Amino acid sequence: MILEPLVIFELATLGLFTGFMAGLLGIGGGMIMVPFLTMVLSVRHIPDDLGLKMAIATSMSTIIFTSISSVRAHHQKGAVRWPLVRALAPGLVLGSVISSLGVFTVIKGQFLGFFFALFVAFSATQMFLDRKPKPSRQLPGTVGLLGAGGFIGFLSGLVGAGGAFVSVPFMAWCNVLIPNAVATSAALGFPIALSNTVGYVFSGWNEPNLPVGSLGYVWLPGAVIIAACSVLTAPAGARAAHRLPVKRLKQIFAVMLYILSGFMFYRGFTH
Image 1 (cartoon, rainbow, N blue to C red):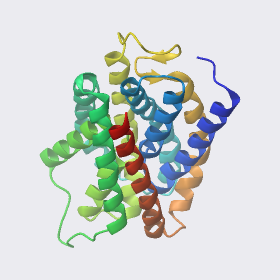
Image 2: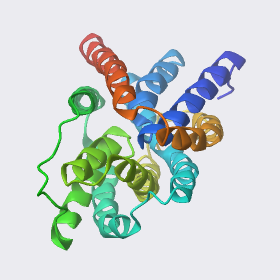
Image 3: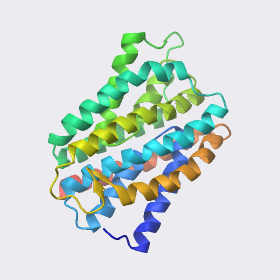
C-alpha cells in the first residue's frame, strides 16, 4: 500500500498532536487516533468492520513509543509512582491479553464503534466534571490493584487506548495527585500497549482481507509515521503538564472528545 504525500502529511500531523497530548494529559492518544485512522482507511477502500479494528490496533501500537518518550520526561520530574506501576502491571497485561486475543477477534466492528463512542463520551464527561474524591479514600490493596489493572487493560484492548481515561480518574479518585496520576498513567501505557499489540498481531494473523503492509491488524505504514512524529512532541507535552492549567485544558479537550464521540456514533448508524 503506497501512501500519497497528503496521507503522509495527515498521519504526521496526527502523530505530532497526539504525542503532545500524551505528554500533557497522560493519554496514549487512541481517543484521537482511532476516529481519524478509521477515516484514512475508509478512503483507501478498507471495509468499515476491518478498518475500525485496524485503526484500534494501529493506534495501540504507536502508544508503545509515545509512552516511552513521555514517561522519560515525567520521570525526570520525579512524578512517576513506580511502585504503583509495578502493582498494576500484572493485571494490565492479563486484561490486555484477554481482550486483544479473545474478545477482539470475535466482536463485530460496528459494536466496537458504538462501544468506542460511548467510552469516549464517558471519558470526556469525567475530564469535564473533574470531581474531587473524599479526602480519606486511599488506593486499594494488592488484590484490588490487580483487579483494577485487569479492568483497565481489558477496556484499553477494546478501544485502542493507553488506559489513561480510566487509570487517571481511578488514581485521582484514590487521592493520587493529578501530576503523579498523569505521569504514572504514561508509564502504564507501555505494558498495556505492548501486550495488546502482540495480541492484535496474532489475532489478525490469518485475516484474509488485510492490505499490504499489515502485521496482523496493525497497519505498519500508519504506525511508523505516527509513532515517529509522536515521540518528538511527547516530551514537550510532559514539560507543559507541569506549567499549564491542566484542569482548563482537560475541559477544552473534553469538548473535542464529545465531537469525536458524535462522529463515531454517526458512522455506526450510517455504515
